[in-house]
Every structure is written in structure tokens, then in C-alpha cells.
Length: 71
Image (tube, rainbow, N blue to C red; front, side, top):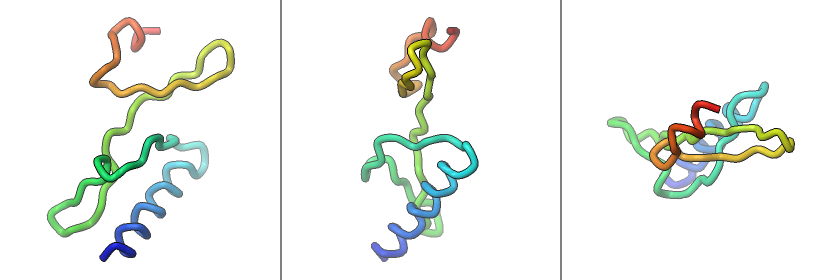
């Protein structure tokens, strides 16, 4: 069971990072949910924002001020 979960998550992360797709940050046990068939699913995709200084910052929508989202 654990190996199956790890393999599913590895495939999901590979998909997220392939071909310029979203980069997943902060993977932990609290961010893995299971559907009705027992398949693991990644949750809590935050936002990534590139700043003018070339750095990327990530945030969680639940804690993001509206001013940040408008810029």
C-alpha cells in the first residue's frame, strides 16, 4: 500500500514539473488526500509569483491578501 502511494505521488510530481507545468512545493502528509477508491491525490496547490528581481515566491490562497493577487 505505501509503495503504491509513493509511486502515484511520484508520477503526479513528474507530471506537475514536466513541460513547464506547475511546480509543487511543500509536499507533506497533510497535502495528500485519498479519493473514494483509495488513490492518493495532491492537494493545496498554492500560487507562484515571479517578482521583478527574478525570484519566485509561493503563497497559499487562504492566506493571500487581495492586493497581492491583483499585481
